[in-house]
Length: 153
Image 1: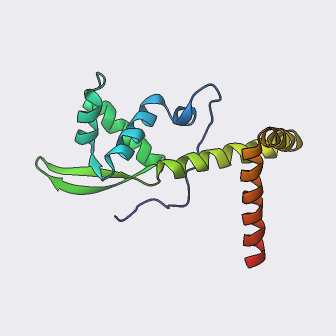
Image 2: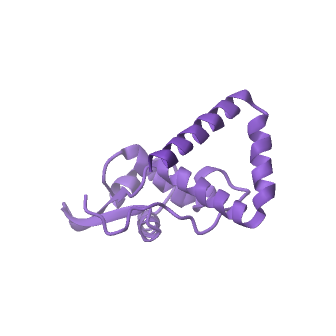
Image 3: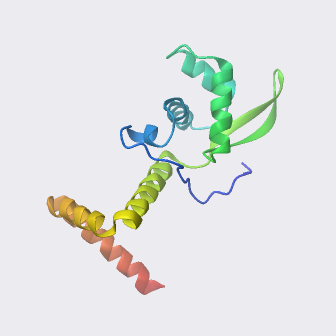
């Protein structure tokens, strides 16, 4: 697939602390549409996403269409025009895997917290990590791999 957007990483414009998972950075419908597209695992038309969503809830085709257009504008989806049964239509696909989006959100949120509350964030993360032996092992492995990468450069 050719891409109209740059593929570096997703950068959320805001983080809502009271929401869960992707809804903390996307609207509820945007998050649901992204989940649906990731589950479909192939380029999809608005009609295909609409047909899947309308089995779960009452929703208008134009709502799905505008939501997918918004996700395209946010850089989460890419699209191309293709010829379908009814003429020309857009086919969409995710720019990033779900894991890439989640990692990017975590990175941007923690970067912001560190920038704004540096020492408090650092001490809290160390406190949380030190409370669990498995987390300590995971952090140790992570630090070792970072040190190895620095030496290899």
